[in-house]
Every structure is written in structure tokens, then in C-alpha cells.
Length: 181
Image (cartoon, rainbow, N blue to C red; front, side, top):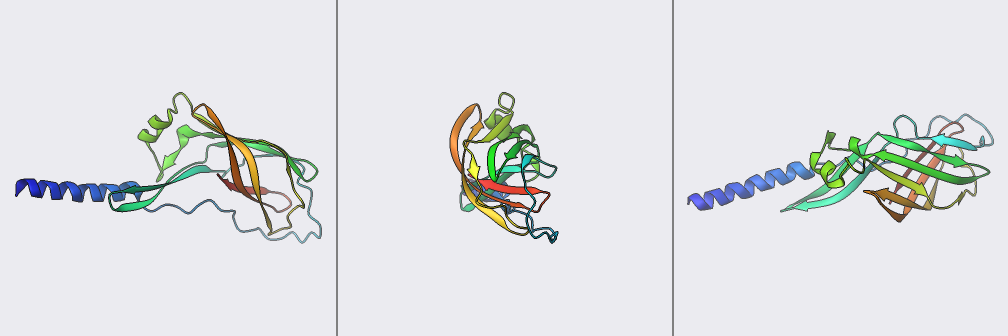
């Protein structure tokens, strides 16, 4: 009876523990709703160098299942730097760095994740565009463009080619974008 009770207690404990690991996941990144239109008949050119601003985020989503529980583990950080260059309706270059030492899961630093990623040796991940991206037109206020973008991802000292689903908007003064690979 003692062995059976211990086994049941272990299963209940694992079930409760697995629920605390997976937990509810925040929504995927999305573009914010468009700001009020400036009323401009033709869009202002976005030509220039655009840097990652305050509020920029990067993260990951991983489907997870443990025992009978399943969900999505989400890590995020605001420690994003980098820039994108736009000239004559073309994104000519772009590179963004993410400080992995600032990555949190459920709002908390995760020592196991830091150890797994070896952030003491490889503290950053870098996403770079591989080629120019021609824009057929500049989106009007409230509109967005969706593109497939080729690039590279460097993490843990290893660089791999990636294709991103990228969505961007421009309101005449701010470029906003979200992508996933």
C-alpha cells in the first residue's frame, strides 16, 4: 500500500509540476494596430536607416508536452539592437542582435535555458538579411506588407540559412515589423 501510495503521489506531483512548466503561453508577436492616419495622399518615403527602437522584442516558441500536459513554452527579451536600411523601395540590408542573457521564460530568467544555450560563451544571436528585398510599393497608413525573406540566423556560434515570414507596416514616420522562422 505504501509503494502504491508513493507511486500515485509521484504521478500527481509530476502532473502538477508539468503544468507549471508548460503553463499558458503569451500570444505570438503581432503588429500593433495602425496609428491615426496623417491624411497624406501619398506616403512619405521610408528611405534611410531604421534602428531597433524601444519596445523591440525577440523570442522563441516551442511546443512542449510532458506526461498528459501540452502547451507552448515562450521566451522573450527586449534586449534587441540592430538596423534595417531602405533605399528606393528596397530593403538593402538588415541585421539584428538579440542578447540571450536577458531572455526570460514566463517573465523569469531560466538558468537551465542559459546553461543549455551557453550564454556565457555565446551571449548573442544574430539575424541578418541574405539579399535585397524589393518592395513593390510603400504601404499606406493602416496597411501592411507580407513577404518571405531569406536570411541567416547565428546562435550558439552556428550560422544557418532561414526563411522568415515577415510582415511590416509604415505610417510615414515609424516602420514596424514582425517575423518568424
